[in-house]
Length: 243
Image 1 (cartoon, helix red, strand yellow):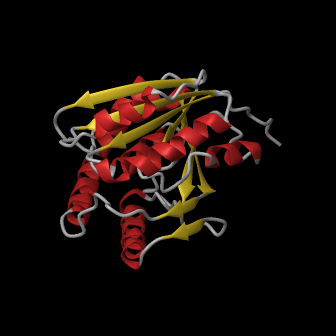
Image 2 (spheres, rainbow, N blue to C red):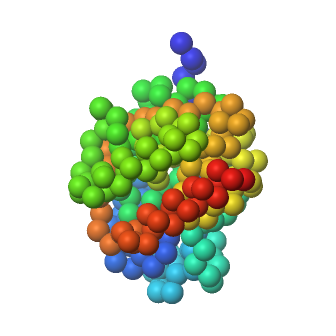
């Protein structure tokens, strides 16, 4: 049995774009997570070209929040490029041993990371750990069309890339800094399919891929365009395949 790994420091990379409507709930969850843990926590907020006041409000929410174990980092650029680009910028800026990517809506509570470590699910520095909504032990509150799109997407990437993961698109993913910064530099897919390109590069470097259960709740105000984005995702997958 692998030796249990202790979580001593964690960077959480959180991309956002025009999140005014979801800020209060998300920041409340993050503050509780910080208060409940005593290891070093770095939160890297990446503003992917927001046109609202999201960044200003987030900073205000943390202005009077004091915690010795917290380091806040903000990355800001004016043009909306895509989630993949924001994830790339955030990971390269992070400074912890372990790097967690997390959606701004907190559809998966970051406190789940403690369960992963306590149960010894995270037991190897040379593996990537992916939250999966399609495992038996996962608890998922979602809507029908998302399940349908997920099944179709899973089938397509299996055909194109021989990727046999149950869920590539859950935003809750844990990487170790020993390999992910080298890999993320190679990523050129900046939309929703960046996860697939990352997985493809991880496979090339023989990094183990582990799917772990999550408690996932669908939140409103999704940025997914049901008509445009699925077609763009297919086009982007073909581009990755042709690289």
